[in-house]
Amino acid sequence: MSTPDSATHPARCLKCRRILRRPSPDGYGPKCRLKIRRAAPARLPDFKPHQVAKAVELLELGGLVPLRQNRIFLVVSDDGTEVYRTAATGQCNCPAGLRSTACYHAAAARLVHAA
Image (cartoon, rainbow, N blue to C red; front, side):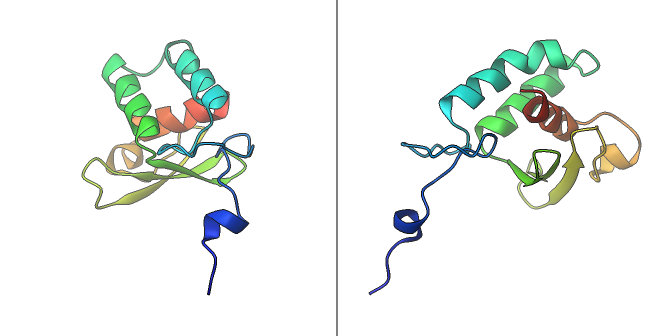
């Protein structure tokens, strides 16, 4: 009989890698989630308010998955059909990012990286 994966590998925070007592849908622990929320308005002066709101919502829904040391991320699109790759420096391969426009995917990545 096989054991569940959670019994052998406990859930960890996506940002600081600490073991989570209660796994959350967004994958972050309470301290990291608080740091990200506090950093939202101050760290993103070059993004519009609706982009910051969408970035925070994306983080709360768990649509941002770190690939490499919290610098490169996989991001789910609005409708959930596409997955984009974005970096904390602002590059994104979504349609807006390819047009050199600031997108909320990059804002979410910057929030996680800055917190």
